Amino acid sequence: MSTAPFRRIVTGHDSAGNAIIQEDGPPPRAQRIGGEIGPMFYEVWNTRATPAPIDRASGEPAEEGIILAPPKNGTRIRVLDIPPEDARIATITPEEAQAHFAEVGAGAASSHSSVGSRHAFMHRTETVDYGIVLEGELVLIVDDGETVVRAGDIVIQRGTNHGWANRSDRNCRIAFILIDGAFEEGLA
Image (tube, rainbow, N blue to C red):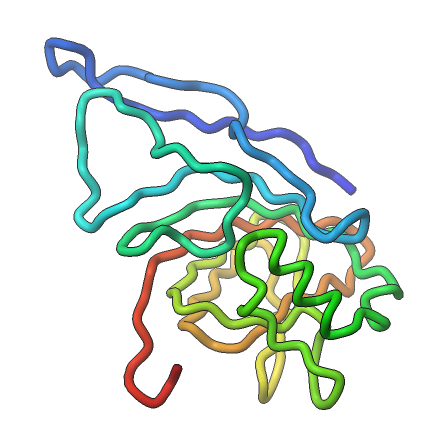
């Protein structure tokens, strides 16, 4: 699986208010989720409020580990490297799928059940997610349909039940910008 590094460049302001490069390096938090067949998560940045405060040079709000959803009233950007699917995904139990999501603080997001699940990692979050495929391809699976997304495609995922399948023979790298959302009455 290709997991070539990428840079996270953060700008800020010096004491005179001039724009500066505050940080330049790899994302500080990276972790494989779901064992050897799971995706690699690279946490890039998060915000804790809307509008997001802009100050001189405070840096990213601190977090421990990898958390699936953005902070309440905030945002999150991450990059995932999703390897080609392994045959073992087809045998994942609902309990194992829930444990996979629990690794990122979202066990309740898993919607895999032994009857009728379209993919072992189907899930739903109360967020609006912009997914931008950087390289490779994935299959976006929803309750009623699926479509192949390729490099350059952008998915706007609006709190829907969905899963991602890499049915190709190479890694897919996708960037996600997650925005805290609120379900309309009757959709939760």
